[in-house]
Image 1 (cartoon, rainbow over the protein chains, first blue to last red):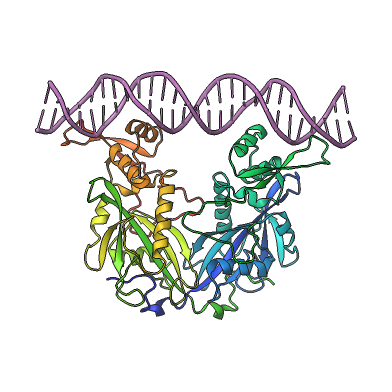
Image 2 (cartoon, rainbow over the protein chains, first blue to last red):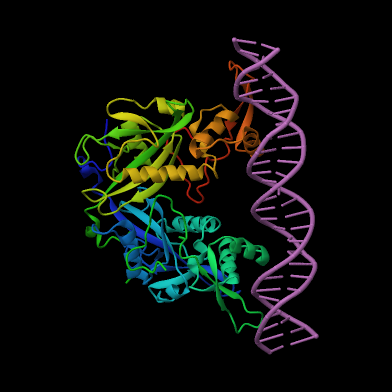
Length: 245
Length: 245
DNA sequence: GCAAAAGTGTTGGGCTTACACCCATGT
DNA sequence: ACATGGGTGTAAGCCCAACACTTTTGC
């Protein structure tokens, strides 16, 4: 037998499967109790069965004239008004019983910086939740969120994606705050400084902070020549119109 | 707007999209010139337009009653008679123009050990190629193969997947051969031995090799309590009936 | 001056690398 | 005996964690 992917024959078999995209959006905002930076994610309320009224990941159906990543970005903008700085495919979920009907969901995860996060409405339909204190979600979305956070915590330690949480200019203390929030532990300021300074991930600027009740800190910026992550032979350009920096 | 993934309404939009699975199968076999272990992959010949006659990745359509991974395993067995020891999702490819019709391909990659590799027929329909000397492939399969090899080379250095290339019992020299073939460079035998011995990835047995014209080598086995790779909250059990170690 | 955060120096331990050397077997 | 790969010992170098210490601001 020599069936190969993408053959034209025998295509009726797959007719009953629909393709959707969802995105786990993560942003950094102060924790309501401690004020420390913490991971938040916006969820949307379902307004139809199944799981009517439950919270779920933002997403929607893929249209025939959209690529998968374009589709994820479009559904994201439509549902939460976010144009993320970093968008990466997470996983394709396609168990038979993950939804009453047969749906394959290609899930992405996105990192947004504070300015972008403010563009998300916080109303009856969309609400921000602490990433590890969200309510039970519709479908298999709990599992998806857990996987996304696991991947974020892994990837932050071997890539530059932490920078995608921050604005144009940031102090090394702010960058360290991202790592601490994601990893869930404190880091030595002195050693952290040296580690990032010896690489070329961030570049110092001439500017400094002011107004704090202590010594001003130098501001840094992302190295524009470097991507946030090395995705190997997969060039994953952000959809047209996105701020690639 | 509050569209969420998996909604029932508005499903007509996605009707024109079909879902396929493909798999990049990799096995270790001697290089024809040097005799050293090298990476090989079986490809299948297309027998229909488009790309009639070209080589392509094994795969096929997803059936409505199959989960994605089950489907990948089933198409794999049907087309190449392989039941892989390790099977992991690689990426979902869904650009609009990657095929004349609209196809989303969920691609897996598989590692097989020598016994399994022998079950693959090598005939007019299916043929083994050196992983880095394969002919131009149909669709975007060249790009997919490049990404799969990149991921293999990355993952081999922070997981135990190298063991998936070997049989039940193996010497440390054989295991080192896997790393050398994948990474494309030689490793110091002494240091390699210590690195793997100090961990618990492999366990020594009482058996040794014999018949070589040198000192016998101790045989090791995979630690059955450990998975080849940590896929986090994604428990990715192999389809029923597969050898889980 | 004092508190607080920015930033520098220094030290010790663990891990990697390089390579010298011994061991056991078949011919 | 000797060639060959199996296996052990050891020292240099690098990276990282820990922590003492200095600097610069606001109050």
